[in-house]
Image 1 (cartoon, rainbow, N blue to C red):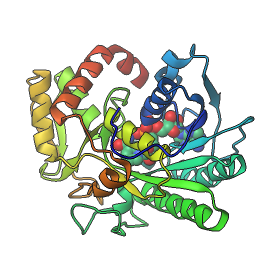
Image 2 (image 1 turned 120 degrees about the horizontal axis):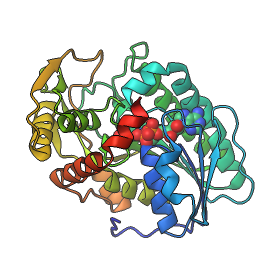
Image 3 (image 1 turned 90 degrees about the horizontal axis):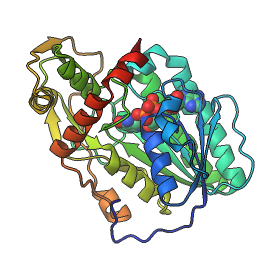
Image 4 (image 1 turned 180 degrees about the vertical axis):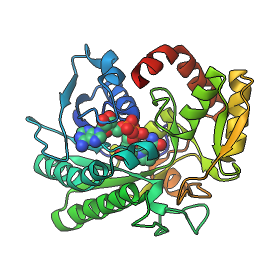
Length: 329
Ligand code: NAD
């Protein structure tokens, strides 16, 4: 866990994590339980799976509830923290489920804010670097308003998150709800789905299978990749603070998609070639967080070097290949 000079502002005994059976959500549930916090995980398994939290099921402080938070949210008993992480998050998923994505970003945010308000709980919205769209400012500071095409294919995700930020801000300003917004940049690590269309799981599984790595465009577009343990530490620093945000959580180390693909070929010892495919519509050309706010206000900065994080991710995918292949069928 990354700690800094900032003191934790609150005691949290019981947390609700929406989307807790997904990639980030399952790591959040795990870390909260490790800190002695009881966790109620709400998920409809749209893009996540109970498999991601199977190892937590015996934990006395953990409860998994099947629930579509776009429809209705009800949690009996006290709640000190609501982390709203439910949403399809990879382009493949949200392009396949545009309405569900818009609903969970709007109605899901409304319902979970209502829960936090009713319980007088701290609320943290999982927003995204996608609110910056194809950015005209580089690196992206939280003051930048973004460059999003509302009617482009990615608009369903980007605009849902932008709406979620506006709704979260309105609850803070008009109802006094204790809210925080984190803008999460590309995160990777164990429990990503090999077939979710995001670059790292796609490259790793292609390399492990000896298939060509499919790099979009000429591969010169950049991303900044953050290992999941670092992202989760940043989110929890926000959850335990009294900061409203938005605060960028990401790793400022920026690399091109071609370099990333070559690196994964090296780390897996694969002989896979690289194939260049069409660039998706409205694909951002660059992406890098300015993390000054996170450092100053949360005392957080990423600790895991990309090489180390990528090695751990490759090891996890290598160990879970059979299960991943079975799930994809
Ligand atoms: P994921 O798809 O692995 O997890 C999302 C979870 O939400 C899944 O378990 C899914 O079943 C659940 N879900 C979706 N709709 C739901 C609904 N209506 N009701 C209940 N559960 C629902 O994605 P992830 O990568 O873990 O992302 C989690 C959150 O973090 C998302 O809100 C995403 O926008 C945000 N985020 C992630 C990244 C990243 O790099 N992973 C970057 C920026 C923001």
